[in-house]
Length: 146
Length: 299
Image (cartoon, chains in turn brown, purple):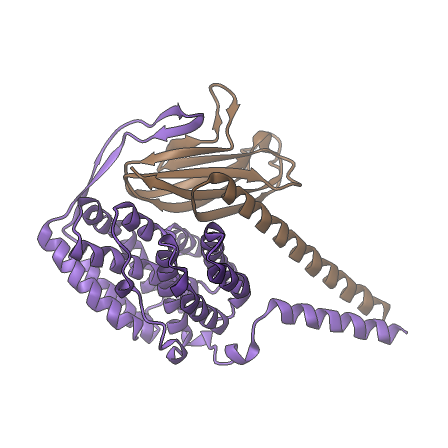
């Protein structure tokens, strides 16, 4: 009987924790979208483990269709409990066409605009600096027609 | 004592699961087995990529509004027959259709008409057990107050994205695919109807570039085409796809260029795409899309 109670309690706690976590990340999405001051289109939630030492950093990848003559805004926001600092990069095939982190200057941006001139399927990559573990939200918004 | 604790815990779990679920009476008719999965030719990962890449329900509406085109209610699908949509296929597909229409209404702040659409979406979402992601009460309140229109727009699109994500995460990709195809069909219908009445080169180009995504959507539909309704959907989409075969998309290479504008980091893309679409091709796409969309919403 004790085992049964323990199992039920464990299940309840896991369910409760998942529900609270889902609420938290939804709030991050809402805040991140509101901060862009543009029309929210999509969000990308990531929760990554720390990378193995010496290995390539863990990253999440998302496909998205972007249309020419459109200014899009891409932003990234860490969850409150995130250990790592998130980086969002936009790729067209193998070419990086936008990033929240400028490697040459070491400067970080919370968001960037992308003046799209080529209609195609692009990819967003979200990772965490120094391969740390972390949770973050990327948001794609529509700014205007160019 | 122990028994009491067990009963209380069981009751708590039961309450929690009821809250997370939806109105059971509305989901009784659900029969996902009617959507035959069969042997999938496209891997789950590729399918996720394709479904995920389809534009948001508001993007086509944003383009139309950006061109200065006036709102017109005649482009919207009627919500009168929502109760007659009985299969999961119909519910998921029309969820996409109404999702795109809701995006169009929200883009033009037409809050008076929004309630019909959010009611229809709620009915369909409950029917395929994703109603828990659609906050009908808050959306209705925001629409009735005609205030916080940004919140109305955000919540509508976010709810739609959550439903889609949930379906994909729970191995119900066939329904997720139907939702995004519904959005795509309604977006193309809106663009083509506007192009018919107020032609604009940007619209023609946007219609032409749908070639990129249509080819991929067809791959997904083929995956499920052992199902009769999917087979019909494939047949209809192929009618549009045939018209796209001679449309060319040319790429002019160029390097991206970062710069700062009013304190904002901006990446300017210098690589360009040019869609080559003739007036004749456009006319055929406009007319075929109209026919296909009419048949699909009644499928």
